[in-house]
Amino acid sequence: MEDAVLPDGDELSAAGLRLEVDGEVARIALARPERRNAMTGRTWRALAHVGQALPESVRIVVLSGDGPSFSAGIDLAMFSPEGVPGERTLMADVGEAPEQRAALDAGIAAYQEGFTWLRRPDIVSVAAVQGHAIGAGFQLALSCDLRVLADDAKLCMKEPALGLVPDLSGTKPLVDIVGLPRAMELCLTARTVQADEAERLRLAELVVPGDELATTVDDLVAALAAVPRDAASATKELLQGAPGRTLDEQCAAERTAQADRLISMAAQMGG
Ligand code: ACO
Image (cartoon, rainbow, N blue to C red; front, side):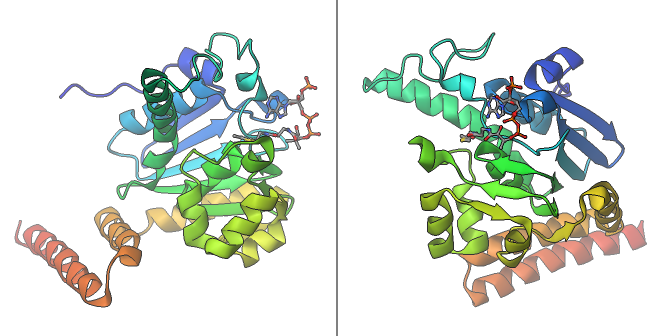
């Protein structure tokens, strides 16, 4: 198989992203602070491209946003008849005809790919969130394994207030984290959750003063990197599977995973 090639500078800048890969750690920044890191279809396609092309060395991915807000969500120009320069408007060709529905389905699926890879067992993803994380911005934070919030963070699932549903993979982690009634309350009121409440709702692993966000994330990255990689990914996979299994099934999954670990350790000792 040909080695995948990461997005180049032009693709990243058109997508409003920056990317730095340094050994085990990839850092992706939303880099349109003058638009509060509003995201377009290009942003999500480029994120998917990053996920597909990440070097095997990478085991930790940090997502952050430049400027005062993590992300103001979808670029609202995507809904305008003119759309975003260089992109088709979301409203183009929307219709009931089966081919139109299929095209829309495929288009949204492509956007979702920009989010879902962040759950892969071979990486741990961390969102560093300051200021607003609205709509697609909140869903991007939710698509990461862990969230570190600055104390000025404000989370809002705004889609229903705009006549839409959240469709960038965020509903599943939201329900998993806060439970169904609270997820309904948050989405169906589209209210804003401040950092202290986010911590109580387990939407944040850590909340820190804004000027400590970067160093706190660095410390977390260092702690994650200190655990052996294969054990970390096997454990992540085990934990991810737990909610869908019975206790007996989970015990069996633990035995299988442990046998794999022990076989690998024995092979290393023997070799
Ligand atoms: N799309 C396009 N442009 C945006 C967006 C957006 N989502 N959010 C902010 N901007 C632009 C503003 O229009 C403004 O542009 P201007 O300088 O040309 O006037 C600039 O970014 C700065 O925005 P301000 O509103 O001045 O920044 P402030 O820090 O005061 O407020 C906030 C930030 C709260 C995020 C506000 O901009 C906002 O409410 N944005 C819209 C949020 C939204 O509804 N997103 C869609 C959610 S649904 C979804 O994502 C699917």
